[in-house]
Length: 230
Length: 47
Image 1 (cartoon, each protein chain N blue to C red):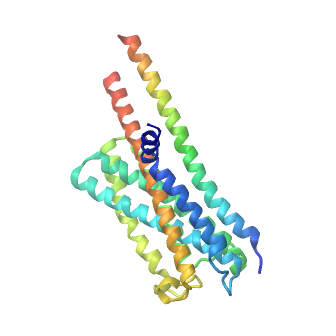
Image 2: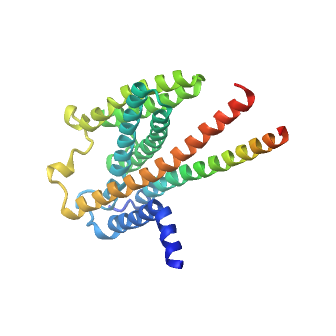
Image 3: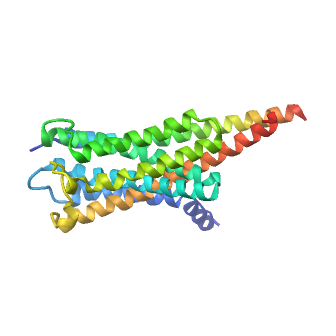
């Protein structure tokens, strides 16, 4: 009986448990497992959180793109809810990535911010998705709000590959593709991968919870409209 | 090269951001629950 209830509890909270365990493993790898970088020293360990934050931001905006395309195609508001929930998480992670990058830049470059191609395009990306939410806040009609937001979400995503390719397209002091250029020892690659997996599970957990809330909000609004005859 | 304070700040900020968002969702859930209770009460009064 106890085993069955324990199994049910684990099944219900599997994402929370998996996320917490993966985060602990990632922290262990960042602070104990991975060797200290010979050039940058201990501060290089920010890399193992900076890249997963950026990855989640980009991935979340990709889900927003999919949600936007599906809404325009099917006209089903569940896709709009998915797109906006994912954009919200993406904007938070991109904000954290930008702030995180500033903290890394100060000891490395001596300044908090440099107007390099990648940093500037990342900031542009932040403004695009901030605009996405401003548009959502200012349009009251549901259909129009979802259509406009879908278009911004689709066009806004065009900036993501530009951010990724910025170090190749323009001369910049930002680090290149270390993982692809073989500039990392295997422990570094494994630590980065662990971070990407841990933060992806966290993203799925946050998205699932946010969608539950959005669906509840939607049902509540429908009930209110039904009662008031709106 | 030390820079421990920057390393601490970077990780603390990321975690604080994630926890703040979780707190926001928990508060939103509480607010929705209150709204549902209010709606249920007004429905009962209307019966």
